[in-house]
Image 1 (cartoon, helix red, strand yellow):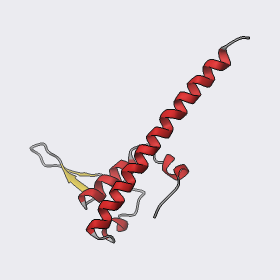
Image 2: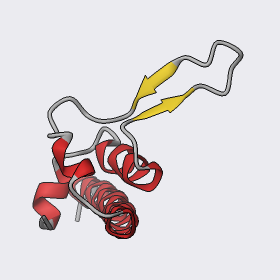
Image 3: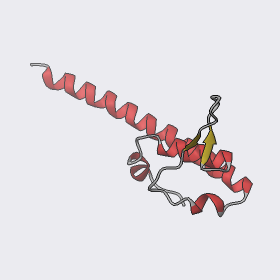
Length: 96
């Protein structure tokens, strides 16, 4: 597996964190803590579910950690890109 930052940046709707949770839990579904016990499917529809089951438990946890790190790095890139854009916008409005 293993992807680059450009690929990770395409997943801005929480997919990396959701899949990380699935790998950490060893399941694509989580039961609600509410009295209904409703099942919530965290796995993004466009991702193949087979990759979850083809790993040992230890490998699942390693992948979960890597996905969490990738999501953190993606959020940091987005944050700093927004700051850069705001600064550039401010510079563009200044008159010299």
